[in-house]
Amino acid sequence: MTVPRIGTYYRVSRVTRETRGNSVGGQRLENLAAAADLGNPAPAEYPEKEGTSASRYSTAARPEWDQLVADVAAGELDIVILWETSRGDRKVLTWVPFVEKCRAGGVLVHITKDETTYDPRKTRDYRALIDGVLDAAGEVDLTSKRVLRGQAMARAAGRPPNRSCWGLRRVYNQDTGEWIDQVADEHTPTVRRIIAELYKGTPISRVAAALTADEIATPSGKAGWTSTMVKRIAARPAYAAMIDHKGELLPGAWEPVVPVDQWLAVRAMLRDPARGTTRPGKAVHLLSGPMVCAKCGGACRAVLVAGSVHRSYQCRHQYCAAVRQDWADEYVERLVIGWLARPGRLAALVADAGTEAAEADAEARGLKDKMDRAADRYSNDEIDDDQLARITATLRPRYDKALALARRLAVPGVLVALFNSDGAPAMDGNLDEAARRWGLLGRAQQRAALSAIFTALRLRPSASGGRAARLDTDRIVYELR
Ligand SMILES: [Zn+2]
Image 1: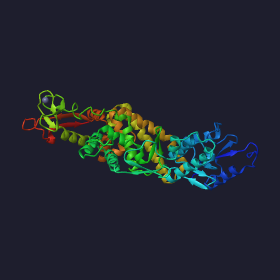
Image 2: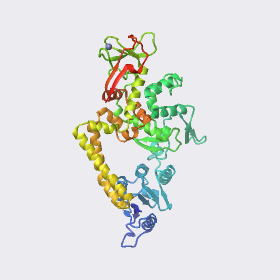
Image 3: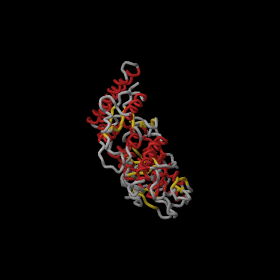
Image 4: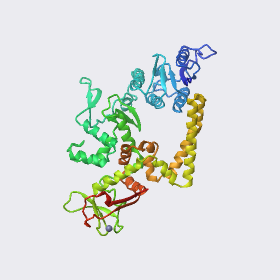
C-alpha cells in the first residue's frame, strides 16, 4: 500500500515556542498522532505562527495556510489534517472554496478535535465541514454583526439565492420567516421532463413544441413555449440542488428534484462553446442547402405549401422534386446518427487525413501500447505500483498531446464538437449517445456537420414524376464520407 500524502496545519505560539527543538505543543503532537493513524507518521507540516489571526475579519497574511491551499489545488496531498475547522480558516468565503478544492481533488479532511476524517465528496461530510465554520463564524459575528452577511453567508450555508425559482416551492419557518427548505411543486414534473428530454438528445425546439402542444403553462403562466424558455429552465442549478457562485457550483441545503447526473450533462452541453448561437425565431432548416436536387442540381429550400400544415423541401430552381420536411429531416438524421455511432469512426477519420495527423496518431497509439504493456507487467507483478505510476506519469501527457493533435488535424472543425474528449468512445456503437450529442448541437453546427459527413446528398423526384411529398427512402441519394 502506498503511504498517503498528508499535510498537517497547526498554529504555533511565538510566546511559548512550541516548535523549539522537539518539545512541541499539543496541536502539533495530536495532529502528528492522527497522521500516524492515517498511515503516514511523517506528514508535510504547515506551522502557522501565532499572531496570524484566523478571524475572518483579520487581514493578517497566513503564508502557511496559503501554501496548504496551493498544495491541495496542485494535487499534492491526499489528506489534510487540521486541529479544528475554525482554526483552518474562519473566513467563510475562503473556507468554502478550500473545501470545494478538497472535494474536487478527492482530498480527505481530518479534524483532530473531532477525531473525524471527512470526505468532502460525500454530501453529509461536506455539510459538516461547512457548518462547523459557520458556527465559528457566528461567534465572531456577535461582535461585528453588520459585516459580511446576506447572500455570501447564505451561499456558504447552502441556502438558495433570494430570487425564488419556478418549479420549486420554498418552505419558511412560520414564526421567524426564516428559510428552511425548498421542495418540488406542481411545476416540477415539467422541469423533470425538460431535463430528461434534453438528456435523451431531443432538440430544444422540439421540447418547446411538445410542451406547447400539451398545453402546459409556461413560467409566466401563458401558453406557448420558446426554445429560450426551455434553455433557461434547463440551465438552472437549483433543480439539482446547487448554487452557482460566480461559475462555481456549490451544493445547496435541499434535495435535488431532477437526477443530478442528467442535469450536469445537459448543462455541459448547453455551455459547450461549439454549440454556437442559433437565434431563436430564426428558422434554419436542416437540409435547405446541404441537400440538392438530383435532377437539376439546384439547392433545396424549405417552403410551406399553400393548404398544407407541413413544410416541404423543394428544388428551388425547377420545382423538380419535393419531400415533406419532417420526414426528410428524420431520415437524414438517422443516417447521421448511424454514421456517428459506427465503431472506429474516429480512427477511420484520422487514417483518411494527412500524414501529419497520421503520424501524430501513430505516436499516440505507440504511447498507448507502451502504457498498456506497463499495465500488463504490473498485473504480472513484474513492476510495482510506484514504477507503474512513474511510467504512466511520463507517458500519459505525451499520449494526450499526440492524440489531441491527431484529432485537431484530422477531424473537420465542426465534428470536433461531437468527438471532443470522450465523444468518440462514448458514441462508439451507441446510437442513443450519438443521437444525444447530435441533438445538442446548434442548427448551424448540424448543417456544417452534414457537409462534412455527406459527400453527396440529393433529392430525386418521385417515381410518378410529380412533386409528391411522400418519402420513399430511395428518393434520397447519399454518399457518406
Ligand atoms: Zn431541380
